Image (cartoon, helix red, strand yellow):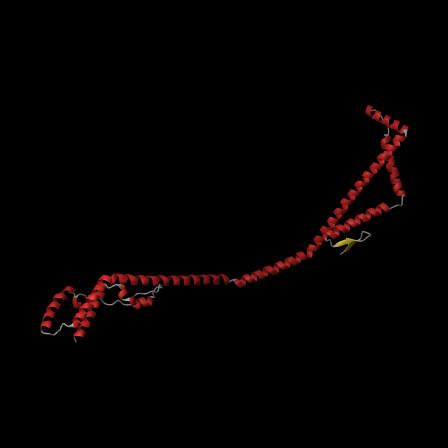
Length: 302
């Protein structure tokens, strides 16, 4: 009976200590480690317990009144041997002294240690939730970006088909442009070659005419005198008549033209033609033209 009474007294003392402001570490079940907000229905369903009057046995009196009451009650109880002080009492006193010492001296340290551990757990939990939320947001962004993937691929395929169509159309015209450019290049080469041959022929005729006229005037004294008189008359400004030197050059070219018409030797012309055809075929082969020339100069597709 006395042991039951002592246990009841210890329980009431512990409850009173907790009501006076026990640290949060004394009731770990009341702490929530979830970072998510509580739902409204859970908040509405939670009701606060009614607050008592507190004090001595819930009467509102100061708890210190328990000291004189306890002393007044303990004296007759010990005197009449209702309560025998023995080893159990000593153990109870030592245990109560230990509990009070731990509560007063180490309560704050224990509270801080447990609170720090709870804060670390809460921080780790929040970081894990933040990582999960970031991963889900990234996945959502990826899914939102890829939801139009089908339309994008359809647009790419349409662009590819349109591009191939344009390339085919350009491919049908490109050979014609290439052939036109090749013909123009060949004609330009022929024109340049003809101009070069013409210039060489002119230089050759002029050299031959100069040599012939010089030889003629050197061997004929009458022509020398006529050329001298014409030159003096030109210097004096008088009428010199026909210039014998000019007349000699004109006569030379007339004779040369008549000689060319009368001559049937076309070996030089054939040689020039063959040289021209060889150059044309060389250009066509080096440039990769679509055509070439036969021995008669007739073009044919490769």
